[in-house]
Image 1 (cartoon, rainbow, N blue to C red):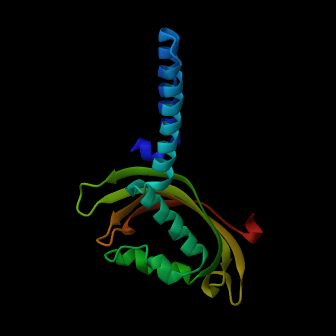
Image 2 (image 1 turned 30 degrees about the vertical axis):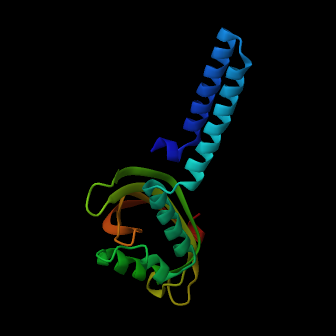
Image 3 (image 1 turned 45 degrees about the horizontal axis):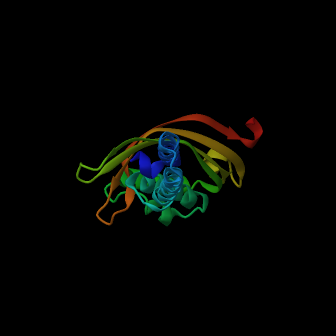
Length: 191
């Protein structure tokens, strides 16, 4: 899995191949080994670029799902947000629909993303991630801020565990298994 996730591993392989070529060149004094090491290193780097940037793995698909979900939230597209939620996750879908009706989102940012577990052998396959989401926007919810109030806010949510599962259509979706805390909430007047 490391070979499809990190270019650093491929750089190490390329340096090792080049090093072997140089060692054989110095030991046998044949330029063909030097060229062979150089060509091998370049081919290893090219293969690494292909693997890292063009091979789609489940780990990459899970991260893309989370980033696309954040984009749907930023676009205030409730239906797109719900398309990232598993059909059996009725509580999560209900909470998403309710929460998105409370505010107009202007910015989202995902940081500290970590893939905690990826189990392809369960049925259906599941993944557990952790991340920090920062959401900024304006709330127009009159029960919270009074009639006609458009209060700017920023919410930071630390998701300590979010479970996703791979559906039959091959897409990863969020389930009801989600643990989070609010390390930060600020309105315009409290910043």
